[in-house]
Every structure is written in C-alpha cells, then in structure tokens.
Length: 519
Ligand code: DMJ
Image (cartoon, rainbow, N blue to C red):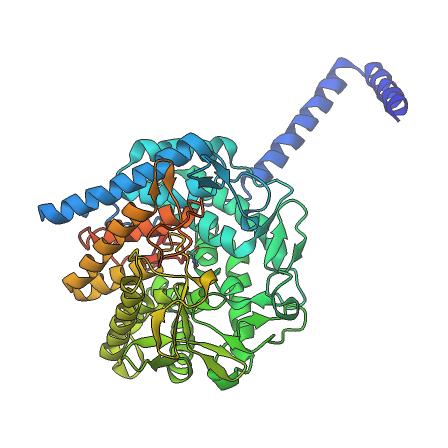
C-alpha cells in the first residue's frame, strides 16, 4: 500500500510539473482558500458573543464580626490544605488518596485523568480569593483537559461536576477557556441521547459516543436523578452558544415525563430508555431521585421565575412526597422515607438531607402561599439531620439512618455508618441561615467544621471515615472532589455575608456550582 501510495504521489507530482508556474500558483491559492474556508467554518461553529448576565456579588462577603471572620478564615485554610495536598500528590488525577498520597479515581470519571478535583474546586477557590491556585487550575485545564479520550464516563457526574464547574468558573472569571471547554465536553455527551426515547444513557464513551446503562439499574433503566439533572447546565449551554440543541434535549425529557402516569403522583427512580416505561416503583428524595426535584425548582428560579411549567411540576411532586414519604417519628423528628413497591421504608439518607434547603428555597412562590409551611418543613429536616450528626461519637452524620423499632436518626447497619465528606447537611444549614438568620445554623455548621477538621483531616489532605460511631475510626483514604466543590463552599458561605452570591441572582447547581439567573 505504501509503495502504491508513493507511486501515485510521484505520478501526481510529475503531472503538476507539466503545468505552467501560473497554473501551479493558482492551484495553490485555491487550496489555501479552501483551507481558510474550512477553518472559518470550524471556528465559527460558534460561540457567538452574548451579553453576560448581571454578575452581582462575586467577591468579598467579608463579615464584620471578628469571630465569624476567624471561622471563615479557618474554612479557607482547610480549603488550602485540601488543594495543596491534591496539588502535590494527585495533580491531574481525578481525586486524591490523602493517606497513600497518590491520585485516585472511580468509574464515574472513566479511565482517564480528567482532573475532576481541579474543575470542581475552581469556583470555590475564586470566591475564597485564592487566585494563584485558581490560575494554576486554569493553566492545567487550558493545557491538559482533553475530551477526545477513549473513556466511558457518567453523563450525570460529568455534567454536574465538569460542565457545571467550567460554566461557573467562566461566569465568575470571564475567562473564555472555561466556556470553550464546557461546550466541547457537552458535544461529547450528546450521543448519549441517541436512544429510542431520547432519555439518555447513564454512561457514554467520550470517543466512540456509544452509550449504555448501569448493570445494577432496574431492567436496563436510566436513573431519574441522572437524566433529570441536566437542565440547568444545558439551558446555559444553549444561552452561551446560541445553539438550541442542548435546550431541546432537556425539554424533550421534561415533556416525556409530563405525559407519563405516576403511581400515587410519585416519580419512580427508574425509567427504561428503550421502552419509555418505568422500572421498579421505588421513589426517593435521596440517592437516585434527589436532584431531579431540585432541578425542577431551580429551572424556575434560573429562568427568573418565567418557567412556570417547571414550578408546577415541582409543586405537584413535593405535594405527593409530603403525602406519601414524609412522616414524624415517635420522638417527634420529621423524616423523609423511601417508597418501595407500595411500602414506606422508614430510613433517610444523608443525601436526602439536602431537601431541607430545597424546601426553604422553594417556599417563596409556593402553591396556595404555603411559604411558612415549607420554611418550617425545611427547619424540621435541618433539625432531624443535625440530630443524625449529634447522636454519633464523631458528631459527623452517617450515610443513612433509621426511624424504626425504637431507633431514631441512627444508622443500624455497619455499611451505613460511614461519612465521606458529603455536603448535604451543611448545604441545608446554609440555605436555612440565608432565609432565617437563626444563629443555630451557624453554630451547627461550626460543629461540623470542627468535627471534619478533627476526625477527617490528615497530613495529606482530608479523608472520609468508615464509622461515625467509633472513637477511632478507619479512614477510607479518599478526598472526594465534592468536598472542595460543595462542603467547603457551603461552609464558607455560611460564615460570609449574604451579599456574596446572593440567591436573587445566582442558582447553585447540584454540585454547588453557581450559575447566574437568566433575566
Ligand atoms: C454530589 O456530587 C452532588 O451533590 C450530587 O447531587 C449528589 N451527591 C454528591 C455529594 O454527596
């Protein structure tokens, strides 16, 4: 083949040399013009200039009270400890093993080094004023973040951490590189939507575009919290590119969900993307369901309250949740259980604790003007989740806790006793603080800060712990990227003034990446 190609090239060269100098020059010019046209086409694929929305409150928030200022500085120091160790031992890897002092990854990020911690941490670095660290991160992203890799990633995780993180970094800093990378990456996720129903696969290979679902999900189903947590980022992508493709994909999902029957008004966690039918009738406001409800509310907020369809879906959903899933324990603690085939499991996950903040955030604008009711519900969930922390030895919350057989807000199974640096309880404290200014939320946030610093801090960063009821727990040796994106950001905001990222102008995606309201 090589010989044949070589001979063909020689033949072409001989033919060319028979032509006059002018003819050759004209041909070269034509070729050049063609290349220029191609390049123009590619470049203009376009990121048209759009007016940046009103970016209010991206700096400062410095509290006047010296005690609060000191606490805020402590949280900033913790961020620096987490970042510096990742920088030293895990740079470019997705996450850090703070004890082994090396890089770490899980299957959600595929098999390549995509620097998940860098992308997830950027906006936290920015609001904390850690600008040198922010610049280092930007430089790595500019030079190394490449999406043409043969790697199978979670569409949901890549969307909330990478696209969300890049978009927030773009809005905060105005640096084009983040916008360009976000759009490139979104293009790689689009093939995941090529299913008979348009409900995306859970995973997609970034290179081949081949998608599939998790083997463990009911009958080949896609997961509600995964395909239902794309809306905010995809609306922003369409806004920034002028290309409706992203918006159309997520609106298609919404329309399809709207048309479907819901058992007891509840959304099951599983939906088959081939048949468009529900899988098992399990409903959760924690894992597998959580951020779907969150994004209905936030779609409405992000649209400057114009997307009333999303608000209605949210209102309908939480009414059904309140009726079938929310109960009070014999000890008076309000909890959100899980619905499994017509039966309520009296167990609540750490993940579910985000709902306190969601109820408070959605109180204003609620149906029949039940604002007071939803703010109260948010406060009750915050209290229950605080109890789940307070009833442990380490004062850190377990992964799941029960309200059954004399047990109240305590984990029963050994494999539910771990704390992996999750943010949800602190997230709810922060929303409750913003809406009520009740000092107990700052006090609870400070208790959590101290417990994390005491029991999760190691010299190589921060680690999760395997048993919050043990006084000398084993470490899991993982510094999760969401610890930098969410846990430390929500803590920092809890000890900042409200004019830092005000909620009238910013909506936080489910990974705590702030996106501006599109007025
Ligand atoms: C985060 O990645 C996001 O908050 C997601 O919605 C679910 N939980 C993890 C952290 O616990």
